[in-house]
Amino acid sequence: MRDFQLPGRSPVYGNRAAVATSHPLATLTAAETLKSGGNAVDAAIAAAALLCVVEPQSTGIGGDCFALYSPANETRTIAYNGSGRAPAAATVDWFQRQGIEAIAQHSAHAVTIPGAVDGWCRLNADYGRKDLADLLQPAIDYAQTGYPIQPRIAYDWERSVKTLSHDANAKALFLPQGHPLKAGQRHSQPKLAQTLKVLAEKGRDGFYQGAIAQDMVNHLQSLGGLHTLEDFATAAGEYVQPISTNYHGFEVVECPPNGQGITVLLMLNILQGIPLSDYAPNSAERIHYCTEAARLAYRDRNLCVADPAYASIPIDQLLSDDYATQLRQSIRGDRALTKLPPSLLPDHPHTVYLCVVDDEGNAISFIQSVFHSFGSGIVTPNTGILLHSRGSGFQLNPDHPNHIAPGKRPFHTIIPGMLRKEDQVVMPFGVMGAAYQPTGQMHLLTNLIDYGMDVQTALDFPRFFYQSDVLQLEHGIEPSVAEKLRSMGHKVQPAPEPLGGGQGIWIDHDHKVLIGGSDPRKDGCAIAY
Image (cartoon, rainbow, N blue to C red; front, side):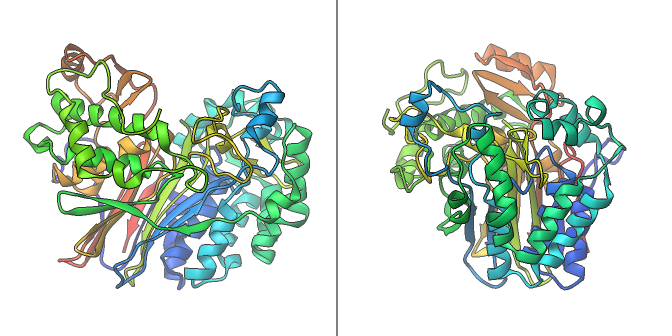
């Protein structure tokens, strides 16, 4: 039990349904969708659509989505990959002939064909209960009449002026009077409202064909993009086979590559043989072991994660006990590795996450993103669509498995998670924050499983992240811990901004209670009833 004399909040408890998102209006929308007869999938779509309006730095209909869905009373988890593909004309040779060495965030080439809308329509048709038009209505209303800016969104907005200054449409929409909005100010997106009305009427075809697609193509081509109407008309996500591993009796389920969920599983496999609970949860030793596992797992992620239709990814080898043992044995308990051992393999950013468990027991883990804060910073002139920057994740080295190619999906950072035990869902969960997400999921799960924290405490707990040879520590980690980590060879510095965000809903099957948590690093909340 938490100390009620200290800042913090309790998890929420309910016995029928629970929702958790990064924005209070989205959480309310999801709950109202359930109350009006929708199921978990309906609630997730309604909340995701609203987040595309009220949390524009993190997500939009010009972005991508992934989902893990566990139907009630079934042992399976369904994985959906809603990541977009490169234009048919995008080849490494073309970029080399243009003298382009890397795909910049603000370039039209960073925009792959958005997959979120196709994902909503597919999931709604296959597993939803309500009409798409009903689910989009809250987003339409807020886009048209306006919404107040929340504090964390204002914080991100202030840091994104450069991105929003590259495109005249983005500047007009998101920098009114030449500066970003502050917390409590009202913002509206009337062009986006009209676009959402078309989607409500025409569904998927309203986005990928006709005037809306033409507006996206025209604007991207005017900026040098290779996109065509055919690229949009043929866009489609797909159901994929989830991957998983066992961690101390729990099955951790992730979407397979081209997402980075495999990184979480590899980290947990390494940590499986390390007694983390012997050390305090905020100790230098716990942070050291988790950081070393992350360094090894991210190394392999960077070498191999790509679109499996274009690259061979040794998933079974990466997740084998033998490989985890090999990597674990390379970790020293008293010192950071100066050089990582050989891999078996050949030689940033913003997101929204939400989860819902409905009164039937259906559970969905849903994540959606425009990648960098405000994505590419490109907004279409007539339809008000902010386009993502996911294509900047492609490599232009033809020998790298993640090199750009026609119709190929880039390496993707967004990863929904699902925790299971004895063939039952225990928790849909996710942690936002681009490259941080695998570390964030590992931190959340070890807080829950190794240290017995409740879901809210596990999300609240101070975080760490190893990136670019630096170990970043949030403010809640004591200076003495930072000093000990330095003495172990880690280059330590304060985290420059809050590390990620997250949500989770723990399902207590014994007591038939749902326990929801939502990250204080964002503006959102959990509701259970």
